[in-house]
Image (cartoon, rainbow, N blue to C red; front, side):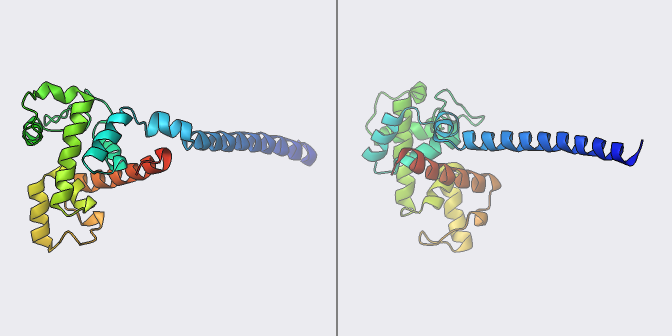
Length: 201
């Protein structure tokens, strides 16, 4: 094969490769645009079913609705039938014993554990519990969310061990449990998305 023929073959190959590369880039760009579109984000990534209950009970209990939505997304992905291996139930993944205590604090005398499958009841109890944690930790959301995930007792112990106060600006990497670091980070990131996508406070 002479030099001219080799050059023609090389240009043909490069043309095919360039075409494939351009197609791949266009496909990735399209996928990126779709994924980041408001339609895709609100429908698949950050949905907000039960929005009326979220906003009602969040405002009733004086908690940020976007924070409540973030907790629900991370805890259950808005599945009202969700149940953890530890026994936490429903949208906000509340332990039955905790739910019974919260129900008592709220004067719900006829509460049954099965009620945790009811979105309105679950959000009502979970939001009240989240508010109680925010109150305990003087509004420090990192500490309150850490307690929601790891328990009040663990967070109080960490505060004593590391000399934290509720005024301490705690970096997530300072939280001792990897699961809790991941949890708090995901909830706060989801909260920002709910603020941007839905205009929730």
